[in-house]
Image (tube, rainbow, N blue to C red; front, side):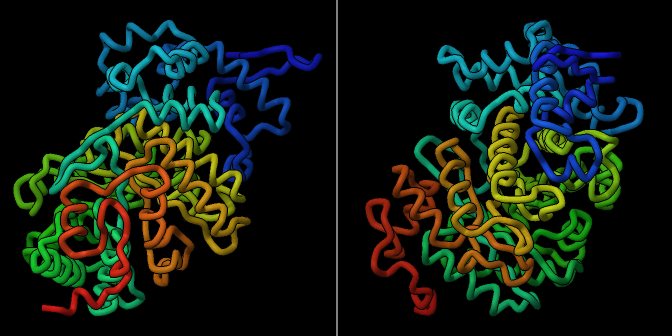
Length: 456
């Protein structure tokens, strides 16, 4: 298949939809590393022109990995509502973009359409959108999920409290938990990334978190971000309390195999949570993703990182998660070189996740060898709240001492809520008011004083 267009007095030819999709992508260092990026800005524009004229049916018929070879493709394709797809399949990608951005197209209409499209279609339309387009379209879409509490309701903005510790010391973890809660953080989740990924250690952390949560009657969810198999072991062997089960995802079967993962294992974890988990549900899974994961494991099949990221959301949707966040700048400058690329990726991922029907959050973060700083991260966080993001991350002083990367701080969610007139999840806000941490939606002078948890 030869796809071509004449632009700037030059005829540009592309050998496949895969090549068009890669070269239509906004500049990403990961695509350059893979050798699939547009060589010039002009070639990028030409690829966007060609992509804009392809139909949604064309895109669906060109999955990133063939159906027969990849379970992620099968999960995505088998989930398509054919009646809805038939209503849209003759639209061009450009026409679908215009439909999404139309003032007459509502969030409910988009949510219905999402049941009839594939992840490759989601990625294709994303590539034709400006940053403002991504914000405007994502803002329309509301995804509401329930675990112990309900996330994504109008007027709310949440945060995940990440109290990591370099040695999994329970006292160190709990010191961070108390600090975060005292600043209004943690209504989406209190989730620890463990150093020791053993069932016994994971169970010990979970029991410590659960005991504290029960003692102070905190309306939230707890999780330890170990491998799904480790969490199942912690539940079965050590009777660990788990509100949501975590797993990192890739957009190809080969990429997930690099994580020691397959769809059957995810289904087993999901089913175990419904029978043995400690939350109300029905949404009991938590996933993390990030552009570039498939390239880092040589599992990208020569496709661009935006398309593969969209496929992560198509896979996640099958398990109806409570939450998902893209750890947008965590992998490093090999995949997202600087703050401009990180900002673009964060807005892309958030839009693509919501268009897929996922309760999306973003870990607005960067590694220390990336061309970015804390101001860049705060800029992205602000743009994401404007786009209707369900939650962001919070770590002490924006510096994760265990994962060694820079992130949002415990202070950021309260500031962003005040700027945009938003509140935490209702039950959590009532708890904050009872503790004297907030009043009328704002932090009180008592906020930030973790000693309030030493009173009993």
